[in-house]
Length: 276
Image 1 (cartoon, rainbow, N blue to C red):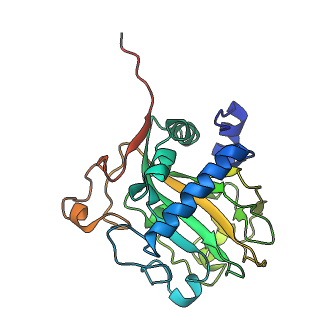
Image 2 (image 1 turned 180 degrees about the vertical axis):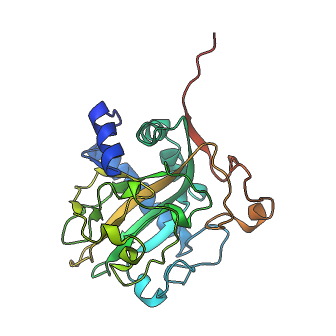
């Protein structure tokens, strides 16, 4: 695993809100990850989130056009909670350290993982933000996106708007069929330059939860699979948004409460404090 970050990579992330790391996984690691994710996805039998009766293609309230969005990608969340092998991959302290270093925080918790599978001929993913949908509001939230297949210009690789994380806020913007919908809230980004992030299988990207990003349609007859994980800085508090939190856990929370339940959001990295 290519997990050592350079100062220039960290600086680039802070400036642009994203970074691509080539050959993050070795060929052997890629094969292991692919098998683990495929198995975990099959075990779910179409259930998107553990403990919630939502299936792939159902309207989960995130978008305004379920029939369209259901053909953007298959999305299965928190595989780490239902598959032991994926759990071992997700709680990797080395990945947690990378996320913490890039985000500039002392501790990192898993918010949720998700397999994202663009099927052949899938619709594009509109420009959007991540953090406004989550149950905490922190400008340092970060995600990793690992390509399990080659992500190309033809099959729906990611695109980013560099530096947009410095402009955006926590406005919850519906992800629909209109690619330019986000510019109604952030008109100053309408003329911004965009950057494509094609990646060969085994490479990855990290991006800030407030960085504007999206993906093209899959214009091929093949799949574009990715395994991702969103991370929450340790010390984050509940903002009232349910998102993926289980109903029973939600009943125990009030706005402002620490989100420090290790069964739901495990702490996978914390800066070591040397005692004197």
